[in-house]
Image (cartoon, rainbow, N blue to C red; front, side, top):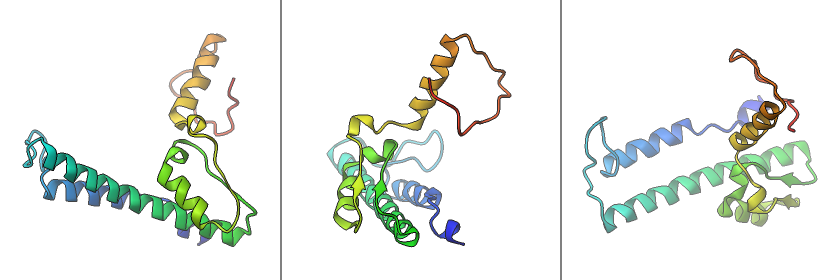
Length: 144
């Protein structure tokens, strides 16, 4: 039960954002359709507002669930990593609200996992390693 309570899933939130963007006219309702709100300052402001609200909702969920997980496991600290850790609002909120130390690498080190996977593949390719497309995922794959 704990695992389900602390799971991160934003599919519903993404769908809600899409529906809202369609409702206010910044995203087409159907493929091939032109958005109702023409390009310009108003459209830019509407997109900025939608984006800010989306970011706020995701940051709030991440902070709440992370702090709850830390509390339940009696963690002595929290380490943020990956591409999401580059988000300034997330960094700020975690630092403000966490009762335990929050460690965050500088933004230049908060890279996307896709880039790390590509880097690992590059070095294996350079060494002459070739694998068939049917290769299974290996979560403990060594990089380098």
